[in-house]
Image 1 (tube, rainbow, N blue to C red):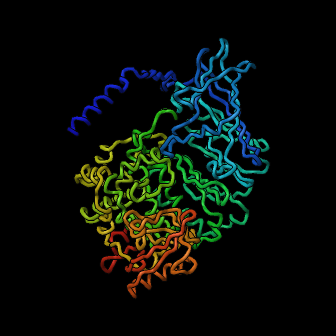
Image 2 (cartoon, one colour):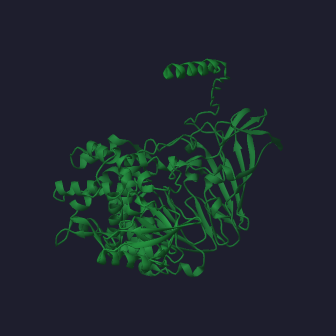
Length: 638
């Protein structure tokens, strides 16, 4: 009886409910891409571009362009969106302001495309052959607004931020004559040709828009340059003149980096290469590759505190390697004819992963970094991936999409979510490839041979040669036959893989845990005033006890401790790095728990930490006496 009554009520409610068909139901409006597709042809003439960069007080760049057009009617001007080296659509369209488009002295009306907001539509009257464009690029003046590119002492001009280009052409075919006005008595360096200086204005020879975008400028008050040989120059800008006091042995190590790079690749794909290096605590950080230059920032005491900053010297090796790996040889999905076409990142495990392998190798071979520092960094990577839960569900190749998916924002549990692991895990996997080739050829072949065969082709060619997965596999098989397709597919494309320590072990070393940090870890923590307890409690800490990260499935995670909270006391005493380390050490000895008082917002919670395994820091150490394959890998080739 009860069941029948319930059914009757249900049927009555259903009968009284309005019919879905009676609700409003829109149909989609078709999305029409009216912007002309890029074609491999040239516009009627070169653009001119003038950037006034003198307003350092307000960090405003004032831009004037003349852009030739083919015909009257609807034209589109584009702002660069998908930017090489950034692996994502990072064009700073939000900072473009005050756009004005003129023709024959009359202002034209423009509208932004509703689908592609980086495109501006202009109806051009008959008889007009070019457009005069003006706008301002309002660069960030506070770090919360974005990367700082202008300070009272220096600036970083990225041409894609201060230029529009016409739709319908490959960017390599769009000519441009760039000019810039700098603050008085400043020096500006860019890998552009034909510079003519008139006062504080620099006019460059005509180049392609593609080359312009790939040739950023650093400029500043305090500048010094060094010739590193082989047409490579180290151009250094600093917050203060005293930061430029490099010793001869410092420059010798940078010169050795160039020598080792050329030995490794056996070719040179540039007529000149400009290291643009800013030693600053004010300008926003960057490490970005270009074909004939690179943008780099390091701490202002890079030279003056040289012995304590070895871990910071891996950036320049990384970026110059990209001249071969990433700029000359590039995945076919990452080469695009313009800056509107989406880039496909899935082969970044070679582009960035192998570069991350070679930057450590060349850091050691050149003497920029000691063997202990290099081994310590590999130990850190091996430890992280040996304890990374996110490997269960996400492959290395899937992390190549992270620059787009996550936009490089902080994550609450990065060890589960994973980040851009194609860099450092890629380094360890390419080590495994190298060690396997060495082992199976009795040392006759190595990944050095792959570097020459893959990146060293077409000596003197300044263009780009693309590749795909099969190209990589075929070149490896030419060096040493093996089932590289299955190996790379498993290591990079499949989730649930074991920790990538195979190369370390084949190289004669092993991952071990000690109570003292490695030389690498010690320096990193000292410079950041941080403490990594990732492999004991599962947390990383600032000097004040703020928790910056929690390892998934660690003891801290299991107790509900999260990032952003702050340890204010250890066993009732005010937090310090030494106090919490002593507590962990004492707990191992007496097998008694200790307490952490943690503040999260306005809530204070006491946690009992029943952890008794002591401090654990990762190290690599030889498995036996004598020289190991990893030792031979890191020896100079000069």
